[in-house]
Amino acid sequence: MYTKILVPLDGSKTAETILPNVMRLARESTSKVVLLTVDAPGLDSKKAGPSWSHMGDALATLERPDAQMKAYMDSAASMLAGMGVEATTVTVAGEAAEEILIYATDNGCDLIAMSTRGRSALKRGLMGSVTDAVVRASDVPVLAVGPKSVEGKDLDGSIRSIAVPLDGSDMAETVLPHVEKLANLLSLDVFLLRVVRMVPWAYGAHERVPMDTTNIEAALELEAKEYLATVADRFTAKGITCRTEVLHGVPWDKIVNFSTTTNDMMVAISTHGRSGITRFVLGSVADMLIRSLETPVLVVRPL
Image 1 (spheres, rainbow, N blue to C red):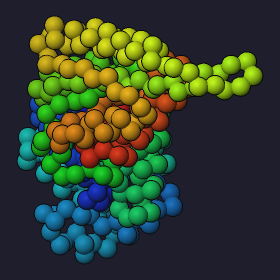
Image 2 (cartoon, one colour):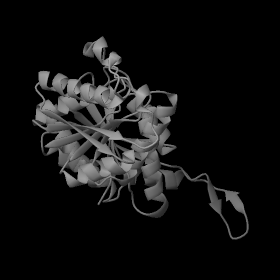
Image 3 (cartoon, rainbow, N blue to C red):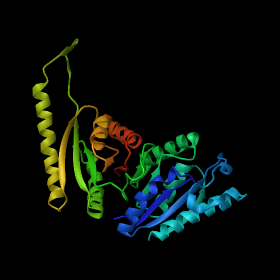
Image 4 (cartoon, one colour):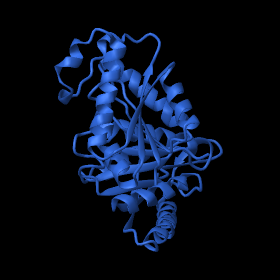
């Protein structure tokens, strides 16, 4: 599955919300974990105290911020080791998103796992921007948890299924091998989704006129159902429980609504679709899902 998972941390409890997911994945796939902190220019690390209560009060008394962060990272690695996960720590200097991407590529990481939340309101904004940049540019899949993530709604907790939005394109389907691996590794059920947007208006040569779209809508829904059934057959043939659902409306809104009908569903999505506007829409849907869901989102960018 995954052999080396890169986990950026900034010393905050909110950034650590990704760790239960990492622990479960690493244990099940015997992955190595690399905990990465970026010494970014312009950030006042004196305000970046470690947050894990089990580290004790001694860290808070350290005078050197770099020593404090090293102690924090070493403690995080020790905690993972206690859970049976091999973990190492690395510190690099530079712009956070750029350094995360460079390290992942240069060191053979096959998954980046990170939170969009950081130390404070300001840092949350910075961490969110970093995650956005990583998701959009990474050649490595990214497992992200957003600002609404809830303890227990993770791969080490309640997650039992995975929703997969598709648009019928080969590029959108690049997420499917990852879904298959996760489903097998973690015994997850798969829900394949296709969102159909209705056509309320037709455009004539000179003016916009309303029209009866019943036949168009029926054809779109039939095509979506047939497509999803074909993809589902690939999963069921491999012994994976797979269901399909055609939704109607705005993609990100409908996907969020569907995914929150239960407390046990994560989402996996490609950032690219057919072409042009579709590619833009799928990337935007991924961003909105990360910001809106209480559960993890796996994002894959087609190469």
